[in-house]
Image (cartoon, rainbow, N blue to C red; front, top):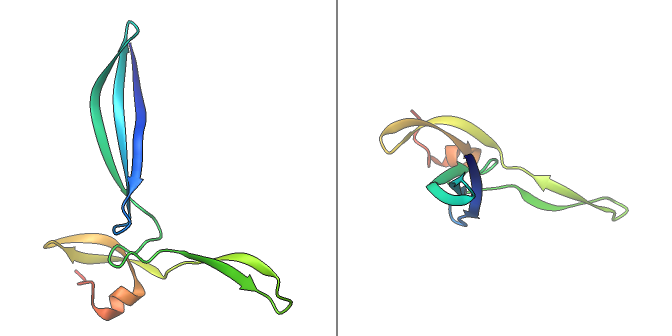
Length: 106
């Protein structure tokens, strides 16, 4: 008997910064395959604001000699204890959302 966990599909939403992974747990008994259960795993993406969805941006550093090198600008993210749906939760938020009052701190 062999138990195998297989990644069936992986997709992400443009509007919300999460990655969803659908796993299928399969069991092999005497050469026959049976699906035991399907597992949906929702994983928040790193370096993304939970409120506005601000994420890293990519561009070029341009020197005085007009040499171009790739550069990544990251948002200023902070971990904040906030009230989400009436419960205290630790979320990752950019400083612009904190300043504008989009986050209610716990």
